[in-house]
Image (cartoon, rainbow, N blue to C red; front, top):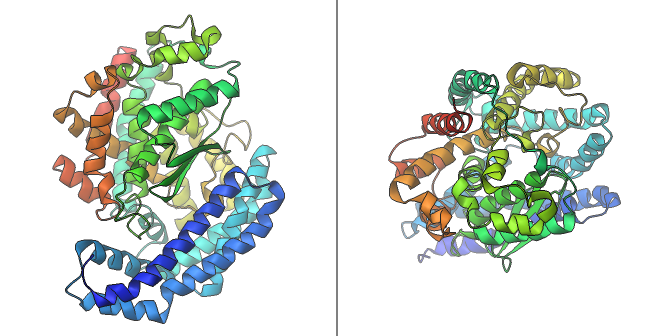
Length: 499
């Protein structure tokens, strides 16, 4: 660090901000994994208080004066300048929100996930709708306070997850996916090619799935001295710092679901584990955006985990763990099965080709909710209609329809597009990586170190010092280009299905 008196004076406040963030992350982890059902209401109050303290600290007069001093300092390092810039942006977003309103929203979202989970379990959207209305109204109020002159509310929400992408740019992106992938999907499904995958469903004992989950997480590079693997209703990754990164999965009778959710979350975890020590526990000590974060998880799940070469060294482990279910299934059969295309209802179980279509319809629905004031009560109908239009399937109930995702219960409007952007970022990075190394040969030899190092060097080590677009430009030599994603999907599935 440089010898900046102003930054030294700011440091104790930065440490307190980090401590409050870490505490809230830990409560959030506990809520989703180990906390008893009856704890939610009481814990929400505690989170509300912590959020209030965080709000007061970030928006306080002392921090504001120190930021002004830091901006005039010439002795700041690039890292310090980045931290000051990030804190200033955070403070500007928060100071336009009344403290009571901020605390109230934190309490609301802290307890709403349990309401959502109960509603999903009971297939009862009506019981969740009142809470969702409150969350949506609060998000709109917050966005209206944060919006710059002429800025749309949904653009404000999108900016929280992916800087540099607004409705205009996302409309262009999703239009290209709609134009290219929907006709391609139709051609593929009408080809008559059938891929057997029934052996992926059956009596796969949870104990054995846990054994496999740990094996594959470690194989990909997850360090259990710095991480934890647990169970939650909705798999996720969170971190306290680069020496405490936590992932979850869920087990079912679909062995590929839990397997690939672990591979996916490990991709997220490797990003956080790759944050340098000098960045961790600072405002820049995490992934730069939700989209770039998702690029890492989708990269490991699909470009690596569904790659035929990946399974050459490790398929024997699958057969050894489940000899009755997979002993008679060849590696080639298994790889074809985990890559088969089948339009379905559940986003987290979607195949790689149709996944972004699940995201596209959520993006369109969010725009309708925020910009067109779509009534919350109409969500199940609109959701079902769009699934039928884009994927040719229709939900039979709310649980496999509008209640399948946790995001809205957490107030995460604007998050969903990051999933599709992440897949596209991953394809662009993958194309660049393949020009520099023989990825397939490395996978065949079980040597993932050069792949991890490429990502650490080009993505992970920068934390939030660079935006997603800056990373793409610096690594690939061009701005975001979704053509790589479309070409990757068409090449892969055209070959698999012989079309």
